[in-house]
Image (cartoon, each protein chain N blue to C red):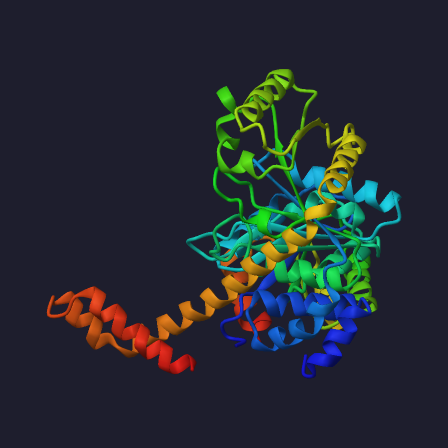
Length: 313
Length: 133
């Protein structure tokens, strides 16, 4: 890890051990990893980034497993970043998405990495996009990002990928409560998995009518039925993904710019958050004054901002 | 940095026995202790375990073996880890393993083996002492 250029070169050559350690350092926010990323970034942007999100238990990992098989049959190399939640109490996590994909473990054309959210909201870990970039730079053709099981607003993945799949299942109740609002809006393709179950037709109908509620100028969203455990419908899903890519090839540049904006903004905010935390600790007297009401919080905040401004010059 | 680093541990069941309750209890206990536990499930070959451990950049691999095949499986996992550049990853285990075999496995490079009666706290204490270095 000492020489960032050496590490970057090894990653670009596809060294699994060194790339995996870099991912660990990114997850642990080691400054040395940033130096490596600066050298790797120019070599990213070649992989197709696919987001897979959806309800807990909908079968996201099994859909990903089936997609790995399909892409491997097409001789494409596949990277997977699978995110599971950290416990807010212990900080620990059980990362179990691999269980469904382990049959690909010894295929050197597949790299699977599990990440815990580590307190980050939005369905991803803070490190997810960087880890995906490492896989991209290693030359994986497709990089699949699987989010935690999401409810209604864990939609960060949309800013990180070229296409988002939302996986749901029959029988989640009236009007598919759990995937309404944000999560439905981010879907480029909707998957009704476990579609051999009772209620699949109803679920598809509900999704169609919810899509119809959107404006006339909304982008078309295909609905695909799958039974991921048997592979049924996965071909059709891959075709739907290809059609989406073909339809949207024009605005891939716009997507890239948007992603750049999100990434840079996050990095800047992150830096300011840490500077702010430092200033707060360094000026406990100000906080004490606000608590005793001898100072108002607005003036205290302005003073802090001036301090931070001087520091970042 | 190292004292703050969040440990990652892979828990796997190699071989053919299907008794995964112990592995699941340990995985849960390690997670409750604040570690990130990659759980790969049943029927893993040494090769699958080693590749997963390297890709996941874990600090340690915990194997649960109840089948009696420990004298074959532990060395095979160690060998596969070395082959994939993960020779520095700590390997420990749990299961029904006789005294003599424990000694021999330790000589072969297994860090320790927890046997029936070991508490999850003992395992966590051991991880804190031996894996967090």
